[in-house]
Length: 408
Image (cartoon, rainbow, N blue to C red):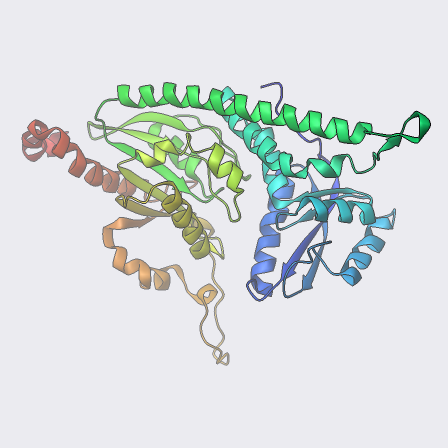
């Protein structure tokens, strides 16, 4: 995909900007900025400093207030800091980007454009590249005007006001982008049809899909279960393309799918353009929802994934919550003189298991994919769930499972 837009932003130093609002507490803003910093690092950017302001709502002109913008401007203007980009934790309008750029004189990214840049760098196959490119152009289209504000109407001979190059170029670019969006949608529709045929050709085999927040260890777990070598690393969105492998546990075959990770504030355009990839989730019989239990906000991450899954497919599916990274789990022990109420971070792993997780019974399991802890138990749990569906599709196999299961 030669048209894929990849922004060269590596090795730049950045500031991060977030807002505390009635809907977003200071604690949440710090969590979001931690994630934004991780996103920046994934893109090769070095986060240097954070700026946070408390407002009722984002300023429609500059996102932050005039005083905070001046504070940011002074920090950026200091040559010793060498700041090349400002990253905002929410999506900015064309007007906000234009006004902030005018004041700061550096590149401005919002959370959406940063995620799109990462997706562009990560896309490997023609399918993933087409999906990312479509999302990029859909994001760019309403923001085209800011690219041409420095070009004004020009005067021709005799005092006649002629259409300037900015206006002409803007209209030309708009048409080009609309044409590209139309072409990409058609291209993706053709790919979707091919993939739909591929899925039908897989027959009635039970399908299990790995889903979860980004960077929770899905690809590592996929490698363990399928004995394959799928790319996995400690970065956000390490894999974009859906990978399907045939897996056999105790002579019971099924299809295992690894999918793209979800994230808070995932751009709507990305969800839309990656719908075909998420068809694997829609057509799955069982979901393995992988959770990083060592993350301080893992419960919120569960909610984000469940909400996104509901948007993709409102049909309930059998789901196993796989709490991964138990080797990295830590908790803060309260002192005897600490009389404040116990918080989530004060719970040990064993205490957590006795909370709402206890009601899940065999629909959840605690593992460490990295240390290969409880992987055999996970395989047996998957085997049990897959077999329940398998024998409804192939009832003649039920006799074999009942009489020879111990020897399989």
